[in-house]
Image 1 (cartoon, rainbow, N blue to C red):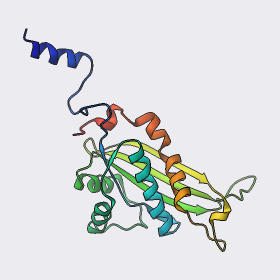
Image 2 (cartoon, rainbow, N blue to C red; image 1 turned 60 degrees about the vertical axis):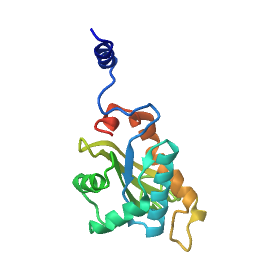
Image 3 (cartoon, one colour; image 1 turned 90 degrees about the vertical axis):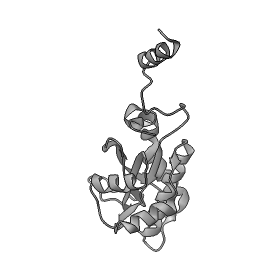
Image 4 (tube, rainbow, N blue to C red; image 1 turned 180 degrees about the vertical axis):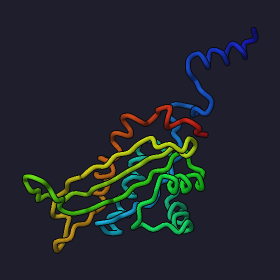
Length: 191
């Protein structure tokens, strides 16, 4: 048996699959859609998008250029104040030739309605889905309410300065980096 064939069989036996990254440090590309917002404002959504870019870059992901992402978003005629199905996010990511697409939404910024003891601390409610554009499957979903200091608001309205938006993005992505990063679902089909 040739050394080449033996090496290939050994690689298969230890689980090195086709489509795996060249090294453990290489991460898939990710397109981050501009964050949609609903009971929030566009500046808070912009800050949250920037926080997500920072979170993924900090973990070694190759985040596609956000100016290109925003242009693609506009070119598709998408709106920041509408919910879209996964198929739209997948088309967005595939059009950008990304391995993954993150679809964030800032559902609300303010004091949440509660049952029982009322809360006086404002929250940013962040909804994040990440999909593999090759398998067309969702690989992560998380919705978090990130509490923050009321001093971040003004005149009864609340907004997210960049440090709070970054902290909210870190809350939304922390489980991703613990449970999904490096998984077979994340790398399946990655270049």
